[in-house]
Each structure stands twice: as structure tokens, then as C-alpha cells.
Amino acid sequence: MKPSTSCLVLGNDWTALWVQKCLRDLGVLATTRWLNTPNEAGVLAAYVGNGETRGRTERTYGVGLTSTVWGLSERSHERVSNFLNAKKIPATHKGAAWLEKSEAHSSIMEFSAGSVWNRDDFVAALLADGGEGAAIDSILKIEQKAPFDYAVKVQTGKKQETLRASAVFIATERFPRELLPGLSSIWLPATMNRFVFSSTKDHPHSISLFHEGADFALRGPGSTVTVGSFRNLFEDRGYGIRPDWVDTFSQENVTRFFQSHGWIDGTTAPHVETWVESISCDGLPIIGSLPAFPGIFLLAGFAGRSGNWIYETAFRLAQAFISATPDAALAPLSPKRFA
Image 1: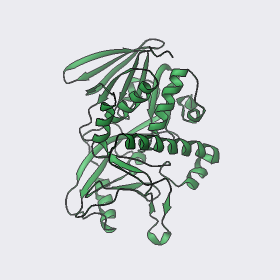
Image 2 (image 1 turned 45 degrees about the horizontal axis):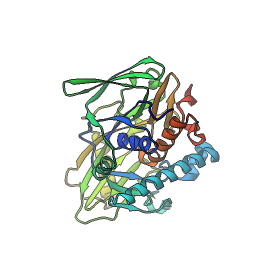
Image 3 (image 1 turned 120 degrees about the vertical axis):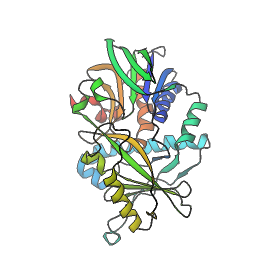
Image 4 (image 1 turned 90 degrees about the horizontal axis):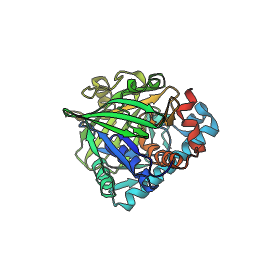
């Protein structure tokens, strides 16, 4: 594609601005709109892998595909770490290795490797780096006028706006699947919660996974412990996009579990963060153009771990789009695998 090609990026604030940055760094300017997500806040996290041990992943996907996925994740973590360091965003960086507890330690698998940083700091840095756009409340319609010619209607308050673009990048799990026929068969969204507890002491930043990656905890920044469960994503309790929903079942269970391990007090009600994640029908991310809609590019299906891949895959997708040359590492993640 030529740099003059009109591009539109739809996402959450940080994902939309990151995709815009990847395009801008390669000489392409993009109009950007990000969805208002009032209950999403706090920290962002990235670590290497897909939330399971490498050995377990190899048994599921095979050695070759696991190496590809792991390689993308490693480079994604490196790319965002370089950005955080360059912009002097306070963060912790702890390498890239699993630390597995033994059966004697309740089968807890702790992943203390990775990075944790403040979401607001990240958004501010992307805006200061040249990012621009506007917040919207919803995406109402996507109409294909012709190949590589799309009209996207969005709404903010009572105001509606129609944007025209030859290429649309969708980097949000909050996208209504009914707007693009065919997505429902490959892409399952779920509304999830994170529960932010206060602690009596400051904690070193860490990312920890439990019960084979089903439950998670983010310690820090400061005297906070953020806990939650990815089980919801797979058991479909929060199926669909439900911005005001609170998963009381997960709240009770993760509170009980982390309180029993002394990570949280548990007697004070936590602050509840609500966000939407999704999983594909084969568990791998969905990165690339949609076969039925040339010019629409998806970055989704991260199974609650978008930070592990999006920084690298967004750049590679932008590069492939501009050069019109497929990226071999993204091929296993392409939506075309479902055709």
C-alpha cells in the first residue's frame, strides 16, 4: 500500500494509539478513534508466553508453532520495554522466564518475569509521541462501499460521525461481532473483572499466574494487589460485551484464594475494573485481514493476554500492510486459517 492510503484505527485508548504509532513510524498517518472504557484503568502488563508453561504449550500446538508464538511474544515484550525505557515510564522489567512451584506449594506457577506499568502513563506517552484521535462511545456500523473503501459510523453522546477509509484496523475486543458477518463463528468475547485490593505495604511489581494460568495477580504499583480469573473467559459466565457486569462468583473465589495465601486482607471490598477479552475457537490470537473484507485488519482473540503479543504483531501487521508482503510469523495467526 502507498503511504497516502487512508487508514482508520479503532481500539481502546492504548491499543488504538499503539497501532497508530506503528503505522506512523512506517510513514502512514491514520485517523484514530478509541472507545470510552470508564471501568478500565490501573496497570498494563506484558510477559513472555501465552499464560502456560512452554512445555504444556508444545503439547497443545507442537514445537514449531509454539516457537513462533513464543518468539513473537519475546519480541513484543522487548519492543514495549524499549518504548517504556525511552519515554521514562516507570515500570518493572524482570526478564522472561517461568518460575514453577512444586506440588508441595499447591501447584502454584509463579511468573514473576515481565513488565508492569501504569496505563495512564502509557497513553500520555503515546499522545506526546505524536498520537492523536478522539474517544467515542460506540461503533454503530461498518459498510463496505467497494473493495478497500469502507464507511464506519461511530457515536459519541448524541453525535454520530461517519468515517471513510480504505483500510480499517480493529484493535479492541469490544467490537460488536454482528457488524462483520462471520466473526461470530471464530471469536468469543467475554466481559471480565479485575479486583484491586489495598495492602498495608508496598509490593515489588510482579505478575503471577496460578492454577495453570487460570488465576492471576498483579502486585504493585505501590500498595495494591490486583487479582482476577481467566476462567470466566473459558466458562462464558460473562459472555458478550457487558460493561456494567460484575462477576461475583470470581470475586468470591479469588478473594478467598489470595486471602488464604496472605496476598490480600480480603476484609475490605475491592475496587472493580471491568474489561472485555476474547478467545478464538482454537485459542490463538487473530491477526490479519478478514477474507470476506479485504482492507479490514483484526488484532484480537488474545485470551486475556493482549500485552504479550500486540506490540510486536501490530508493528508486523502494519509493515505487511504497507509492503503488501505477508509476514511468515503472522501466517499461523491469520483469520484465513478459519476459511
